[in-house]
Image (cartoon, rainbow, N blue to C red):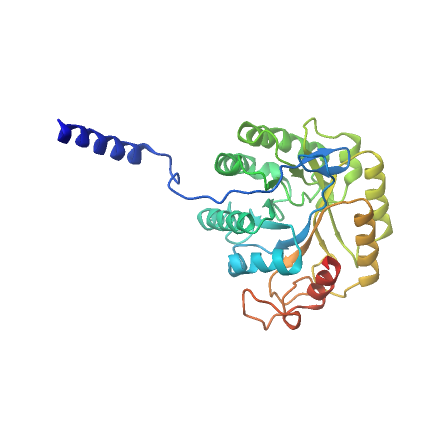
Length: 326
């Protein structure tokens, strides 16, 4: 009788293993961070204290995967003072999610979420459209991706979803709303409360279009991107007007050089932008974590280490941002 019971137990264990969902054996880190919510222009924690997130965006993770490591994420949080990291997952560029790089992209997203969670940081998972222009081009793939992401991480408090990086090429706010109205319900099925960031027209600069006709969902914010040597008083006024319209803004990408990601650095314009954002407690991530030979990269091109960075390892942009964080 005892042997029969043991045999039945063993069979049950084997059956559970056979029919368990894929990935269910993975041990996931759990976040101790507060869930966030949005009221007017403010990002708030569970006790309704105002929160400002400050951090860095990766470059394309598939091109610079070496920086997605726990030691570097720990340094960003413990030594530099960042409380958010943006994981930029390109969709259409070389080896992007929609162009042959799906498997590697998912691995890198899992690593980014794990290391951010390990080190008490919020993580923005960024569906990084760029050359695709209109997010509707890959809306089916986006829905599948965010279904996978939210089923896996929807119970975590530190995940923020950025559903379309920089709509461009004549993509209108009506086009973006059409896309958002398909993708947001997918996210909300498995994660009813977390913050979602929606890009705005013309490389996420036309906040005025979103302010005139916002989406009908709670806990949604709108992306503003700027490059300080190119975008100055006119875009700053657009931002100020949006704040006055109670539009919640998140600067998910900015640089202190020109809009090409390279060229001359304009610290005076960058300082003015940061002063304005800090005054309004607007959250922001600077572009980019890489050693690419361009002025927006924070690591010098000749530096090959992937963690334990000293001040001398950083570019002018990296040193500037570190000073701002401190």
